[in-house]
Length: 497
Image (cartoon, rainbow, N blue to C red):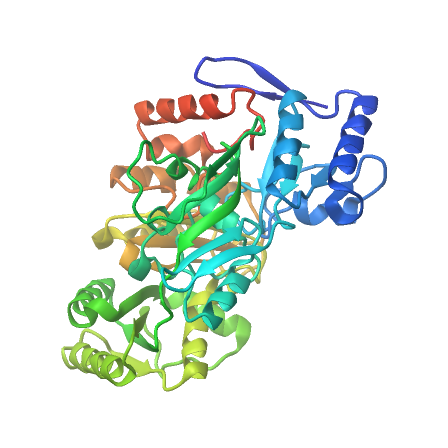
C-alpha cells in the first residue's frame, strides 16, 4: 500500500510509502528491532499476526476512528526516538505519535497504515524542585501518577482531566489540553517552561529550561504546544506546578435558567475571587442520563434545568468554607440559585464531582457519541445546545424508540472558560445525524466568532473545518511552519491543517 500526502505551502506532492514491497517492509521492522530491542518495544504485525496487540493502538476509545497499522514502536529514550524518526524520515515512512490515546478528534490513531510511535516507555520523572515547584518529566508519564507524586511533595499538576488515569503528559501538551483547573491555574501555554522535542529528521531540540523568565529569541516551544504531533515528538516537559491547596471546598446547586447560571458565575467571581478554582456547568438532561445509567441518588431533592459545581481552593479551611457558605446564602436568598448543597468531607466532594466528571462515560452507554468541544461568547453558550436539539428533533431523529438514532442532546463544560461540550448521545453512528450536525455546528459557531475547538484540538475530525475559526492567512502561515519542520510530511499526516 502506498500512502500519499498533498497540500503543503509549495504544493509539493509527497508520497509516503509503508507497504511498498514486502521485502522493504521486513527490513524496516528488522531495523527497529535492532534499534529498540526485543519484547514489547516493537509490536510486529508484519511478520506475525498481532491483531489483538495492535488493536488498542489502531482504535480510539470512542470507537469512532480506526487505523490499520501493522507496526508499533516504543522507544525508551530521547536518543532512541531520534534514531527512529531519522530512519523514518530518510525512508519516507509516515508516523503517528501516540500517548495515552485518550483524544476525542482522531488525532492519535493512524488514518491508514502509518507507524505508531508510542511514548509509553518514556515514563520517568527526571527532577522536581520543591522550592520553585518546577517539575521535569518524560512525555510518557501518566497524568494521575504524576499528580500523586506531586501530592506527596505538597504540590499539584496544573492540569486535571477526566482521562487522567490513562492520558500522558506529552499528549496533554501536544494537544494543549484544558481541563478542570484552567480557571485557576491557566493553560499549558503559560505553565510549560520548557520542552525537549525530537524533530522529524531526528534533530533533538533541547529547550528544556526550568526558568520562568527567558527572553532570548523566539519562544519556539509554543509551536509544539497544541501542534498534535505534526511538527515533532515531545519527549520531555518542564512545567511549573502550584502548591497543593490546604483547603478545598465543593458546592453543588440547581438553577432554573441559563440567565441565572450567568448571574451565579458573576457573583462567584465577585465573592469568591482569589479562591475560586472551578465553576462547572451541567444541564438537566446530562444529569438525568447519569441517574439513568448509574442509578445513583441525586445530590438535590428536586430536578432543575441547570446545575453548577463550584470549587474553591485556598490555604485556610474555615475562612474558605465561610466565604463559600456566605456565597450560597446570598445566591439562594436572591433566588439566583434554587437549591444547593455543600460537601462536608472528601468523600462528599468526590461524590459531587462524579456528577460532572461522569458525564462522558455515561453518554456512551447507548452506543456512540458525537462530541463538540467549542468556545462561544458566554451569553450565547447554551443557545447552541438548544438550537442543535431543535434541529435534530425537527428531523425526527430523537426519541426513546430504537429506530431513533439519537438518545439525547446535552451540554456541559467549563463555564469559567466559556468552553461548552455539546454532546449528542446516540444508539449508533448515523449518516443522517452527521448530515444534520455538520457543518451546521461549525457554521453556528463561526457566525458568533467562536472557536470550533476549545481544548480537544483538530485531529482528523476537525481538519476540514479549521476555516470556520481561522482566516486563510493564518492557515497559510501554519502550513509554512509545518513545511519548515517537516518537509517530507511524515509527521501525523492527513490531520490538523
